[in-house]
Amino acid sequence: MRGNRGELVGVSLTGDPERLRGLGRVFLFGGGAEYRVESVWFHDGRPVFKFRGVDSIAEAEPLRGAEVRVPFSERRKLEPGEFFHSELVGCEVIEEGTGERLGKVVAFVEGTGPGLLELDSGLLTPFVRAILIEIDPAAGRIVARLPEGLKDLNRP
Image 1 (cartoon, rainbow, N blue to C red):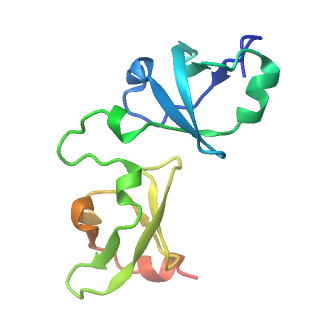
Image 2: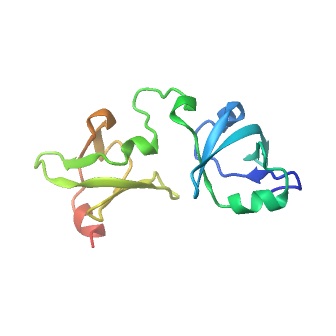
């Protein structure tokens, strides 16, 4: 939170945070409620959101920690080979060569590196082109070329 106008400071996961300025509406998860965006400005590189009807610290407090999700209709067009994290969730990951089902993507895990796909099998797979050689969200399929020992390294 910031100031007494009910503004909330966010952490941007987009490669182009400036695009947040043009948002008209968002959904906030925890609760999933829709909010109209009055304005977005930046402080120390972080977006500061002002939502319609959230005009005080007390009104902003319940929204603290919520994840801001942009509706599909307001998402920017991606370049070929780029993907939204949400497009990857639900995709089956298949090992190249063997055709073995490694699991279904349940989450994209942010970290200090390139990010990880978390599979329902417990496997964590780095989100890098050298490993995930074919990504087709429309078909719900990702083909992986796993380095030796990766399956054994991080499975339960």
